[in-house]
Amino acid sequence: MISREAAINILNKSGCNEKVIAHCIAVSDLALEIASVLKARGKDVDLDLVEIGGLLHDLGRAQSHGIDHAILGVELARYYGLEPELQQIIKRHIGAGISRDEAKEMHLPDDDYIPVTLEQKIVAHADNLLVGTERISIDRRIRKMEKKNIKRESIERVKALAEEIGIIPGKG
Image 1 (cartoon, rainbow, N blue to C red):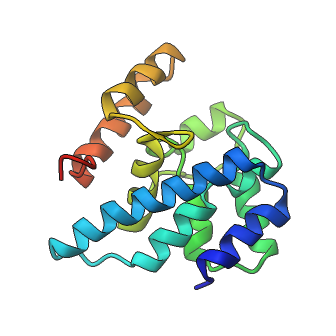
Image 2 (image 1 turned 60 degrees about the horizontal axis):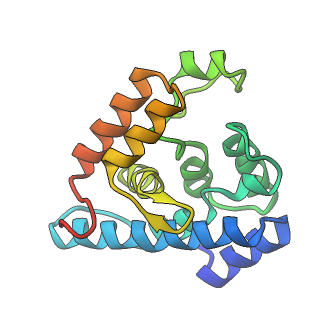
């Protein structure tokens, strides 16, 4: 696994702006906080994978701020020779994932983008709890999704992910 410093260097080298990098650091820190609580509760979670996955989840924003940033991020991760586990976190971090059918509607490559592993779920959840570097409630995330007319199915997945992880920072 690459170091935190190496991950931040990749974000810089790829062309991510300062706001994206600050967001990635905030997601990584929050994801690590959540993962640490889960680990203390006996869950088998790879803290290094969560930390670096959180840092690199928005790598594709160096090239796009659209929904395709996840796919572009995976391409960059492959270019840098990053582990498949990191590539999967990047691919599956949007919201609480994107189903194969939704991916087709969004003109993304035919694939399933739903987080599967605990580490993928933690990073996606942490990302949902941040706007830039500001921590927000899951209720606020859902309101933001509703204002954007995001499909109810996607909103329900975000709620279910929050319930599954079971940790809202500050509330344990």
